[in-house]
Length: 84
Image 1: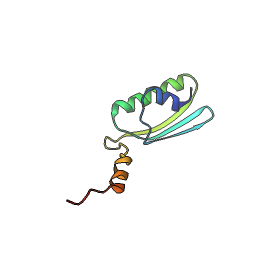
Image 2: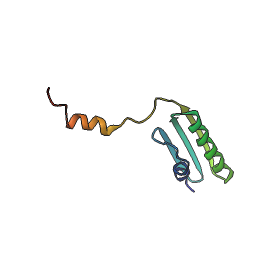
Image 3: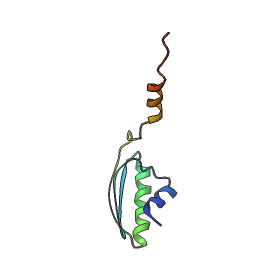
């Protein structure tokens, strides 16, 4: 099972993660929004290592690093508020 498949099954938000796979090794860098999610990533990487996939990681916790809702900002531009 590929690392990205494992992350999807584990409900990991990969919006701020870089995942580099090369053969039987993987490197994951970036940030997640909580320590709980960071631990889930580390557990999944540990399971992958137990199955023979080498991994390295540098994952930070940044609570404010949630992707912006791009749809809201685009909607504001396309449909500006009507004058009062």
